[in-house]
Length: 83
Length: 458
Image 1 (cartoon, one colour):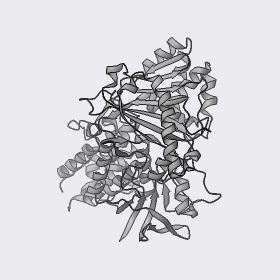
Image 2: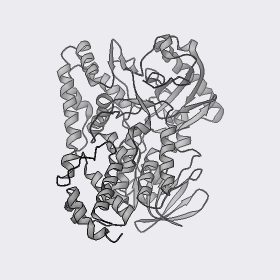
Image 3: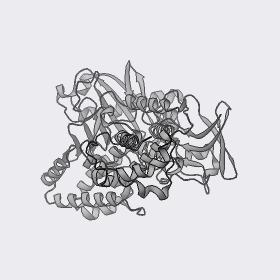
Image 4: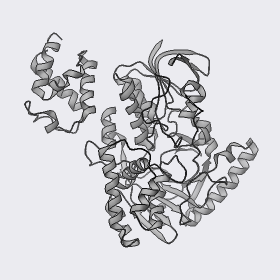
C-alpha cells in the first residue's frame, strides 16, 4: 500500500465510525481531535478496524503516533507497504 | 467447536455485545432459552396483532445532541445510524398527582415552565437539581451509593413536586424499593427529562432484527430454544456451558445477561458469599387495541405517569396489583411519518410477584380476569372514552415475565445491587444486562457493549 492508499483506508474507517462528520477537509497536520468529534473509544475502534481489515497491530504505547492523519500514515507505512 | 465467548440470553444486551464482538472477529455463540429473541424487550402476538412487552418509549432521544451523548456513543460502537432506528419523538407526556399536573416533552424548558407555574418558587430549585445531575454525569466520577430521595428533597422544598419528579423515573428504571441510588436517578433523569423519549413506529421488533442480522452477518451464531443448564467451572475458570439438552460447549469466556441471581442458579461459583438476592419490583400490563386514534376521543398525550396518592408508593405491593398508580402509554401519539396501523394503549401497574407466582393454572386465569377488571377500572377513569373504543385487551403479569425471560419474580429492573464492572469471582464469566446497572432500551445495549469492550475485546 502507498501512503495515499493508507490515507484513504484510514479515512474510510473513520467515516464508518462517524458517518455524519465531514472528512473532506481534514487537515493532515492538525490533530484529529481538534477537527473531528472523536472520543477514546472511537480511537480504539480505529485501531481495532486496522487489525481486522489489514492485520496491523498497533500496540498501546504507539497510540500517540496516531495524533494526526499524516503522523498516522507515516507510522503505518512500514507496517502496511507490503500489503 | 470452541467459542471465544458464549453469551447467555439474546436480549438487547446480549445481542449488542454479540454484534460488537463478532464484528471484531470473535467466535461468538448466543444461547437463548425462549423461541424468540428480545428478553425483557421482546414482542408477542395476540388477537392478530403484534404487541411489545418492554418498550413504551426509547429514552435518551437526543437527535441533535453531541457525539458524546449516550445514544450517539452507543450507535457508533454498533455502526448503526440513528436513522436506522426510525425513531419518532413523543408529543407530550404528563405527571398527574392529586391536585397537580405537570406536562413535559423532549424540551426540558416545558417542564421548567410547568414547575414554575404549578409550584411557584421551585423553578430555580429544579434548575439546581438539573445542574447537579448534569455535573455528576459529565464528570462520570465513581461515587458511592447515595439516597436520591435525600439529595432531591434537600434541593426541592415542595414535597409533592419531589414525589412527582420521582414517579416517572422510578417507573422507568428503579430496581430498588422506596428510594433509588442518586447515580441511577441522575442517569434516568437525563435520559427522560433532559434528552427525551421517542418510539419506533413498528415497535421493538425492527431493532431486534437489526441487531440479530448484524450479529449473524459478522459470523455470530444464535440458537433459540436452547437454555443453559449449568456452567462448568474448574478452579476459578469457566470451561464450558452445558445446554438444557445436555450438549457441552467449550469456550474461553462466558457473558451472562440472565441476571445475577439467575446466573448464580446455573453457576453457584459466582456467588462468593450468600446467594445474591433477586429484585422484586414487577408489574402487570394491560394492553388495549383501539378502534380509533386516541386523539379522536380527546387524548393527545404520549405517556401519563399517575399516582392517586400524594406520596408516591414504589415498592412490592401487598395486593396483586397496585391500582392507585400507573403508567399509560398511547403508542399512536408520537410524531410518526405515517399513522400506525393499530393504536394501542398500554397500562402498567406495580404488582406483587409472590402472589402471581403462587397460583395454580385455573386460579391464575381467574385472578388475571379479576385484576384486569380492577386495573381497567382505574384506567377508564383516567382515559374517558377508552371503554367504548377498546376492541381487544390482553394482560401480562410478573409470572408471564418470569416464564418468558427467566428473570426471578419477573423483576424487570433486576436486583437492587448492581455489578457495575460486570466482574464475578469466576474470572472469565461476566455479567451484562439488567444486573450490570444500565436499564432501558439504550441502557441495555450500552451494558452489553461496555462489558464487551472492557473484558472481551482485548
